[in-house]
Length: 53
Image 1 (cartoon, helix red, strand yellow):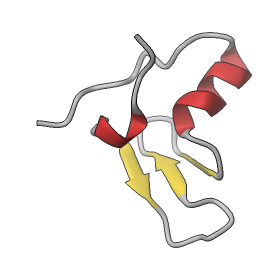
Image 2 (cartoon, one colour):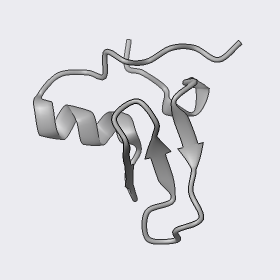
Image 3 (cartoon, helix red, strand yellow):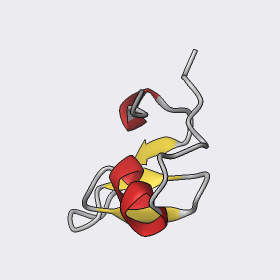
């Protein structure tokens, strides 16, 4: 199952219109969903995903 960033405890919305999505676990902001950035850069699905309660 592909991680859904918006339901992850590490996902956050930034103030930067050029990089509106962020991941607190990996410490980056991007225009794309963080799970896509992780997949593209590492070749693996994000293993840090934790469902929000």
